[in-house]
Length: 163
Image 1: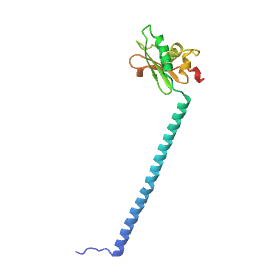
Image 2 (image 1 turned 180 degrees about the vertical axis):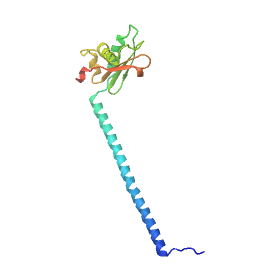
Image 3 (image 1 turned 60 degrees about the horizontal axis):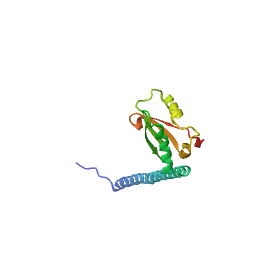
Image 4 (image 1 turned 90 degrees about the vertical axis):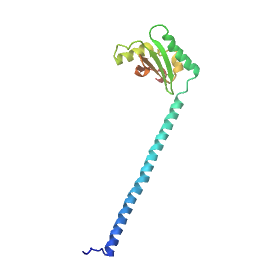
């Protein structure tokens, strides 16, 4: 039995085509990796700059409340719920919001729309009240809840300082 042999020229062509294919594949991968890396880094940088710019704008526009202002705001709402079954629970202060939480014994038996109108008219301070001078440019939210503040009905009061 004779084995078919390959000539040296044929063997050299096969090796040369294999090397060209490997180089072409390496070039494709070599160009994609830096482009993807640069693209991801640029997206990250833009997002970081946007967040920094957004934070600076927000910090410049709203001055932080003093402890005396926080105490006056808390006292205003806690005095309203001394008598009765509704009780003042807590006030949370964040960078741009004030949330007043009020615990009620049973859920309000009205739709979400009617409940929000009720909270705005009955529980939010009137526009001429002096508490708004302490609230300033913060968003004032009133949250009525029965079990957990997370499950309550929160409404943002119309702040006269922002109009």
